[in-house]
Image (cartoon, rainbow, N blue to C red):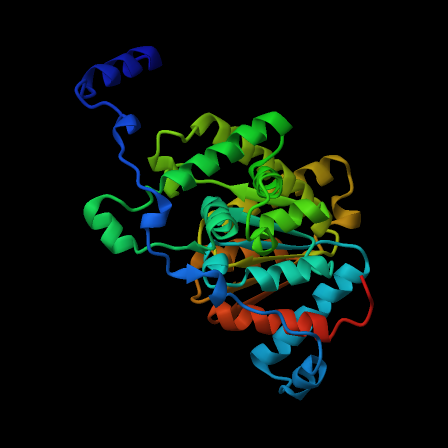
Length: 338
């Protein structure tokens, strides 16, 4: 059977009565009617560098404490050479109140860029504009109100429209929108801070995985175009990081490890075609920080990218403890002002 006939036969067997849901039938609700589990008052407060060096030197030179100290020194060495220290993060990092920790490291020029999934934009926007985020999923699922906050969908659409206006990616547009509209809690926005400092912020969306895709204001076309822009931006970051820089994954068990692997492949393909792969590349340092050990982060972040050269690390523990500890160590062991 020819390919044309095969396609035609398949089309005829599809159920003609099954049509995509019309999202104009959705009933949204005002965000003020929603209870939030995460509030500005609950967020972390960055520590200074005082005492960190003594603490880390007091740790035994064994197992994970030795690994953490070595990883911190490699990250700071990369920054001293002007190489990237790029953080890829799941939205859970924002939901557990760690935005001030990340922003502090960005201002100190230790973190050089950030990447998130689509939920990262949602939680960052909600905290910036309304000072709360993270609704009760179970109760919202029971009555169909989960993810139906009208203002969140409208703001996300404004971000999408801004990507078209500025011809930029989702990450940059999110930060620019928060700054333009002078959100009440803009100082707690990772994206706004990235925009202010001129640091790369990328967003990688799985269409249908985020609450904004439930609302009629959502545009798959604009999401696809702007998210692909950010993928190409991440590939450029990876190309620089592969010269001895550092890229870490914090709390994304599937999406960002997969995106990173493809971005690094693009970077190495281009380096290879430019005949710079062997000379300058393959020295990347990676790490995975998560609450559980998962297949994709272990393979795609820690092991595969560093198989021949470089170094890969894995640290398992709750983000609300491990990330402030990491940040304290980075500040405490930093010898050279960046």
